[in-house]
Length: 175
Image 1 (cartoon, rainbow, N blue to C red):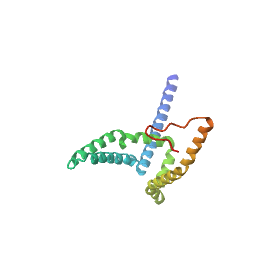
Image 2: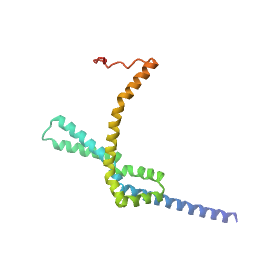
Image 3: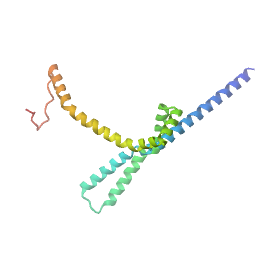
Image 4: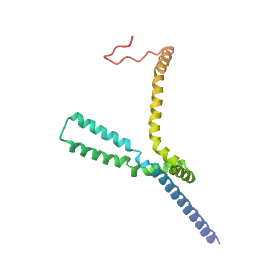
């Protein structure tokens, strides 16, 4: 009788384990579907562009006309190095894990439905531009606050009896 119970328990645990694995696989598949829809594979594109620009600047400074093939060779090698560390196939497993940890499978399905809708599609196309413009607005507002924050820091230093930082060598303090 004990053997029968042990076999039944093992069968139930095995079944539950299989269901949990199926649920995890289904959840991960929904996360992948969402990430594909959200163009997450393009997430690192700006990094590639920055590296290409960096190589282009170094090439221009070298003033090596006629050696464009050298630049192209090094850019290709840089792309290979980037692919090995931040290419989509490298970061996708971690991105899937991130989304499955933060969204249920039902929530991912809802997100997919939203991003497939006309409003969701509009959101996907305008979000990058909105992010840049939002950052520009915040940066401009921050620049307005910098003088006030610097004055408050100086006032606090004065009240605490802290001497202001020494001016770098070769410069004279402001009068």
